[in-house]
Image 1 (cartoon, helix red, strand yellow):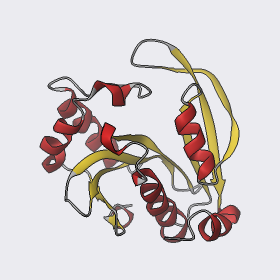
Image 2: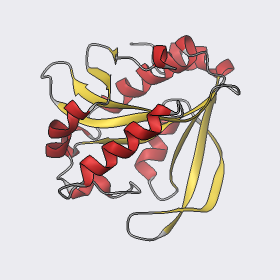
Image 3: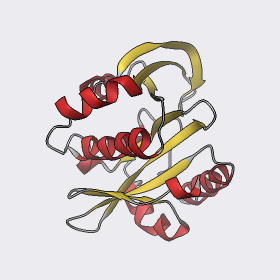
Length: 192
């Protein structure tokens, strides 16, 4: 797994394996409470980031998760985080998620660059067969973004998990399989 947990970059973003060195930069970004509306945790309070990062680094040890800091290439600014998770190496399945960006970067095209890098790495380098994306059923913006990159609605997990506010959410599951990747790369990501 270690050979796959590496820096991914293009001319807009760099996805760097998350380390303790990113904590100060990320603390500044996560003070905006609006970015946590659809997330299952909130990292805007002092101490939240360190606890979250400690948990992620622990989860990375077993090879089932890889978390990245998202850095803008043009400015060097760290603007959020994203992960591969629920990795099933034997079945060649992976999930992309746990993604959050500073409010100024939501809807700015950064997410499309991130997803392309992650899809390309998953299918072309890691040789994944099935990739999954999940979101709160009520998060219309996220659902549209998943559909825009070619993911297909696979189903809904009813009353799947708690949100940070205590509401039980339905989780919508989208997927991309290996046989769809080439067409997605050549149509939706043709400019990359």
